[in-house]
Image (cartoon, rainbow, N blue to C red; front, side, top):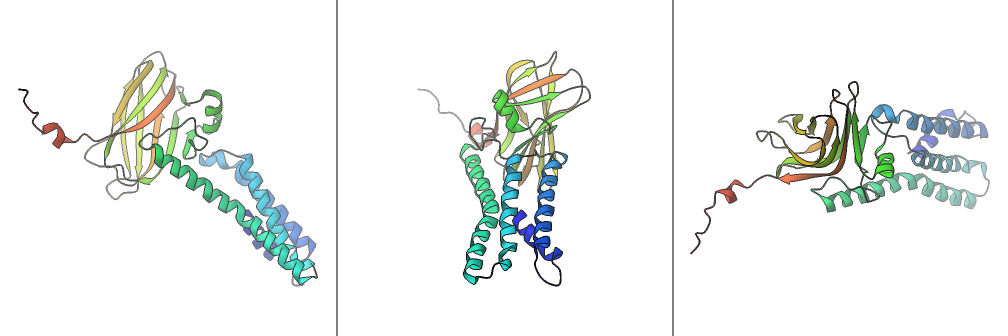
Length: 267
């Protein structure tokens, strides 16, 4: 995208006399500053600044600059070759991003209804943590798991982009985790829906200190269709707590027809 933006900027900077070195250079510098600014403001939007994304942006800008420079060459064949190379460079970053998203989505489909994977390279692609200063990738590298730490003044939460899935066959979330706290702490759950029946479902369950497996059930009166986001959180408050999440898994809704079937009598 930054490569395309660089080409557009050059058109704005171009003088009536046509392309020149100044307009090409101005477009490249402006696009580079914008790419850096995008990464700087990422934490304000609950995302993590990534040097890799910035480098991809610079690669696109280099390709866009190459495209903008073609009219300075006199040979038509050289222009064609440079334009082809520039086009490949411009399209590579967005196509590479699409490939990453598709790969991560296929991996998420394979492990579903388990929502966490701390071993796979793409296991945290759709996860973000808040506060954003401690990113998912940083936590996994240091601890091999997600950790939510709350204080009396600060809440902590983990957000999953659920890709607008239909979760009507599930009615609860199972949390396998270890809580470090001086007393029991309530673990909150929020489902953000893309549905006319309601924008959010809220629920919670108490966890005792130590290693436990708890289940949080959401209201059965409002089945979660088209779930946009899952949020697991610890609200700010006493006592201070640290929740190490080992696994998050959806649990299927109990089939009442199966439960009500009479059991065969023993002979």
